[in-house]
Length: 401
Image (cartoon, rainbow, N blue to C red; front, top):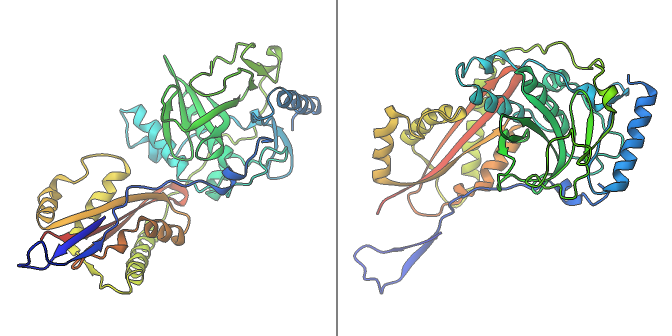
């Protein structure tokens, strides 16, 4: 935005100074691998061979659709993907927050999975040499690929008795994706493990572009419907005219031992380590903001910083209004004297550089208007196994003229 300021006691015909001010609306990220993806996109030996033939036949019918039937574990042993699906316990900490609201608990579990850092995408996925870790390994290492995230979320939902499957498809924003489908009373829900967001099947804002393949602990189903967009897909995979199944019905009822553990063990994150990290991030960001403004002085507004620090913890669980009741009067008082511009950024913790880049891209630091002040607050919410949710709020404050 360009703001013109006339000199005091000067007529409008006098010259005015123009100042540029950036108001950040939001951002969107396209992984480079999504642009590269083109259209080509121990089990019994007999079953593994059958899986390869099944995949080849499916690809012959719909070459552009995704299908994964077998993968290797981290020891190089090949398994059917069905053996990765098993009900597993989420952290007890997540179950204790919303004791009487199961939907809020499911949303929180999806959010927890989305906070586990992702491995860099590879353009050659689905080339027959996929390597997947178990859910326990994904949690202990605090990293995983898209499919491992979806399997983890699916296994958590199965723990509650939900009917859940892993969905392979493509997204307008992320390229190749793995979602989780849950069958509710009157509808199907589509869960994106990358963001923790849930969409109804007919939600026009769902970024999922194609539904290509489903699998659970019993079977793999390939979508042979002509229209594979989520809104058009008939999800009843018992209909053989809509879904081609890997294992015949007389085989899929046979329980094969899962490669997942009986349960996942969790440990509590070190709170002192988290607080040290929060302080380090805040100090680094303040230093960077001043570094990014070499031609302008940077003044920090302590009162606004204090209020932002009260707000951020409440945003993690989406409880309460944006401004806490006790801080209401103080924030209103600031708005009487300042034009405040800012936005809370939330991201999983991977490294400090990623946080610096995210804050820089907002452009809030580039405000040129004279007497601009800034407020910066950082909050880190620790989940088990050192999986951290980072919140950063950078705001600029311009005095009202």
